[in-house]
Image (cartoon, rainbow over all chains, first blue to last red; front, side, top):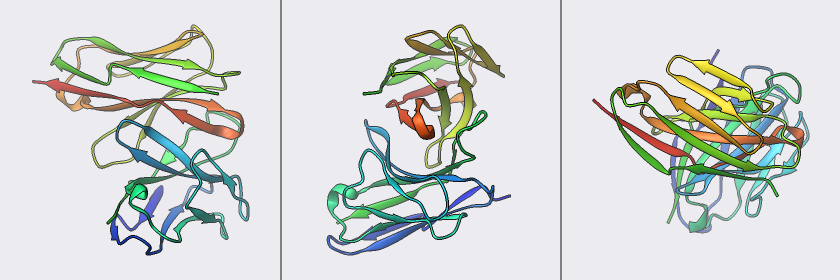
Length: 114
Length: 109
């Protein structure tokens, strides 16, 4: 099992460009999440999904959109990148609301917006 | 609003020098407190979940404890390979996590 994978690992964008980050999980998890991690601010939730075809806003959703067309994939889009979106982005998945229910994280995507 | 504060921000230890990391929290109805380890350039890796005051969990040189206001991650006789950032998070409704800022631990040989 690969667990949670993210594509790409690194990306440099110019202000105003768009891009999509891809997250895939092979654990048949219902829940998926997108976080950003900035120095001194910890991990902050951008958007999440509680199942195929559903999405919801997290703490810092502005400037991002998401889609969950397939259970195993969760896409994060930036329509018009801004320097404030320079960050490390992590995707995570979990089985749902029952049990131990820890979130499993991907390796991250380092995004720089010039 | 849920809040999680970790201290210290950074901690330097000599190999074998035991210490504790602190995670204080305010949350309406704790549904679990999580500890993660994060190595540079990698995603967080799950360590423990604690659900109720008085609960303790151990894994190798790590022991996590929980009270009604805080959690401690005790590191006994640490080794250089324990160097990492340790993250604490509280779980709220819908399995959403609120993370603290983390403690960066450096263990010198």
